[in-house]
Image (cartoon, rainbow, N blue to C red; front, side):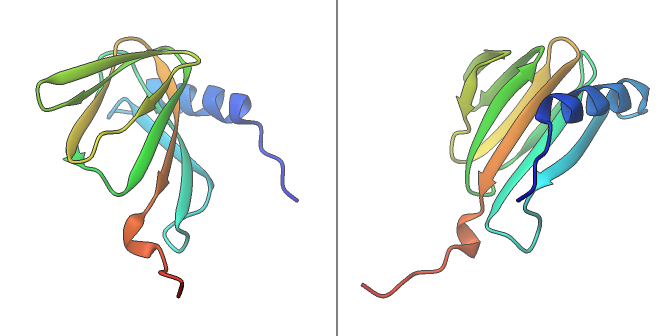
Length: 117
């Protein structure tokens, strides 16, 4: 059993993002490239964004602190602390309106194993 404080990780990553030239920081809390499920705490300095990219699989963004915008196509959804945003299929981006931290969860569909029925 392993226990991780997501709140502490969010605080650490916000501090790192504010200090980083890119305005972003992230740390994988669970999973990784070799796993199907991955949970990453991502932090953004106010005004920074994760530019448009393809959805890697089924994904959610749980807003831990701050205020972010998830954008896809002509649509946008605001997320504040406590909100869960469902990442749409296809291209999307994420922008921080203020210093923010999110828990990004993804199940990489290219890694799913089909079990015989």
